[in-house]
Image 1: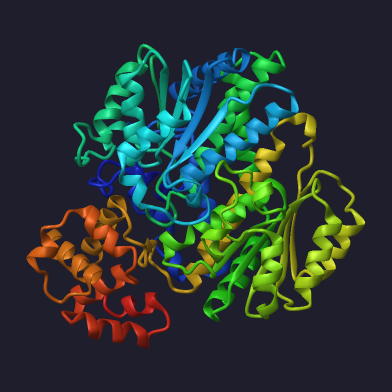
Image 2 (image 1 turned 180 degrees about the vertical axis):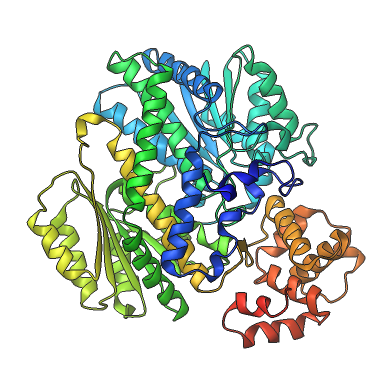
Length: 592
């Protein structure tokens, strides 16, 4: 086992940071890697999710205690599936966690619908359904909003299994929901899913609350001993891009929730009792799916290179998807703004039937603006007319989708650009004739042939989805690396739109500049307010007020960092950054 793959477990490695915020030693030079090198580093990072070796500090995904907890939670879901009257399973989270809550609740409700069973799953995402498609970071800081959202969804229910997801054990929105559950044990059984140990949960005071996330997690930990609550928090290693929990955190969330819910469905409807061995076997299937995905590393690298070239040349990347795979494209695209400071048009996702296929609680949102227009028809009217060879288009589908439609849309795209690619999943060893036509249209095709997978195996679609997520995360991350939006393995143009991101930005400034915490926070505030001197009016505001202003500010972290390193005014720094096309190179000149 690679030393760097395990050294994050040492208590001496970045000791002040939780696992989810540490930098990954495997990717320290990812900003200078080739597309193939980038994919190789992402592969090594994703493999950390399944490492069996354990240090003294962290639980891992395959540890006995984790597997036993997954089994117990699956049994609680099974009880609700067998007797759904006045009962509900609620999945909730912020950002990527909330999008996955929506996606997984929708997928498992669809499975119940096919069996003519009562639908028992509901989702909550901080910021409402608009957060499914765009960054809505501020509601993550509102514990009361979380509690009220949970109350609304569960009105009239007598038994609720609540699963709150916060990868870093940090979101006040989820903390508020968990605290509410703990106050009403006669109705709610709370489950917390995240990827830090409890002692690394966020302990910062939450305005208006008597609890912190850590205190809530500690109460859950105590109740878990009596099975009155459940805590699932294996470490899966630092992210490839520090703090970017949309990647491993999102993948591990998908794996854990689907393993639990699939086991419950098998027990309730197929007479297969929930057991530790079955949970382990299912997780190993996901591990094989990750390995299978990266067997196509050169094909993934070709997509990274094409997408990176598009972003470097002021073009865009479009994901055109069918079925469940399409939402993974929407999700990946939505995450690029807060992570890389990207414009919504840089990477966009589209789903065949728009909101009819999405089937979200609040219905169509296209009236909110062009970034909420998500149907293939919207692509044809808004994007296709101006498409050029600077743009990259990726078709995402499976053998279950209408390949005639894929061919027809592909032909329309091909008239505008030769930079068209495909990601396709199938079990049939013989390619359909339409697939041959798609191959001829595309510059490259990632053809995933899943031998041994059949619809009877139940979870094969979930593994195809995970594989697609890994590919799209690699494409969007790799493209932004090639555009120069990453320095070493840090997000240097992240949006400072909630307290977590504010603190992350301040820590990053301190790490890269070597200056004191107070100096770095001062520079951050100057960049947010575009002020060379801080007034009492600014310094007397709380973090919430700062992040509200930061929502409309661009390049906050780069401005703050360069001003710290050079002592220049913000106007001089802005001029300096404008002269350099690649942000990373501007910082490389200044940082030792």
